[in-house]
Image 1: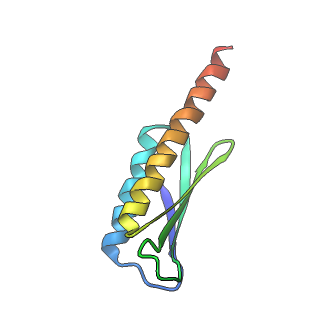
Image 2: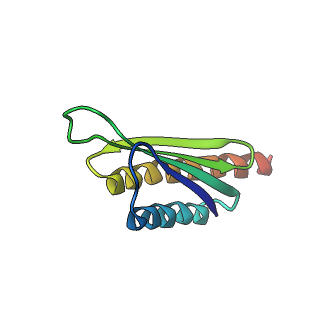
Image 3: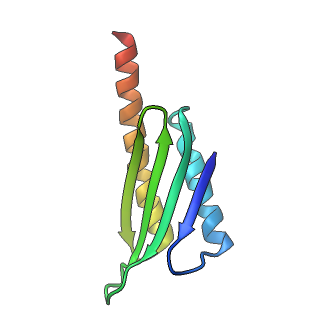
Length: 102
């Protein structure tokens, strides 16, 4: 799956990039229509220790799904965002299956 990962105002290391790629690739197990994705990693200014933001947009046939999570590490924020997208994919797949039954 084609995933574009961009980091804003910092350089992400290869270990983080491969972690994100693996997590996104697993989403295609829940729905075959996943075409690709865009991931944006941001650092929020401020004294809050939970200043790492991961935004993930998944491209599927018919519509796009989006999740944005903030945490103290990019890995944790990515896990949370992928979990939110997994739930969205299962819900979307359920709607498609229901529509095809009618």
